[in-house]
Length: 183
Image (cartoon, rainbow, N blue to C red; front, side):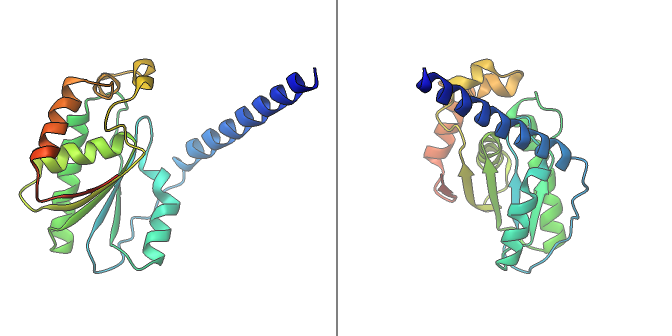
């Protein structure tokens, strides 16, 4: 009986922490993020994941800037249920703005979860040659994820294992020799 009590308390603690984190993420959406641009190095664009917002990069952005990297940019992909390709179009628009603003075309993309797939889609299928030099994916479902079956929207279907989108993306990655990929 003591084991059941400990398991229940562990479960309650875990759910409580998850709810606090969710609340923090929701609240961070209402705190405007200063889009200050610091640094003269290679521009970095941070791309958020499924059902998220650019504000989740707040602390990572500050840390990267403190390390002297950047300029660091973030993006809000918008409506949470569109195709990954439509999000890649938004990254393309942002990348063009960054290139004009910085005068540099050697963009580094860092994507979390679905943001890694969005970054890859942009770099492999939409970006001009040599516009993206490096892609760093963090927890991205490059082989798909069974959890996507529970998700909503076209992007969730594209993140399922063996989806036509992922098959096409893998082929593009295999053929690409210009972009360094870190996962």
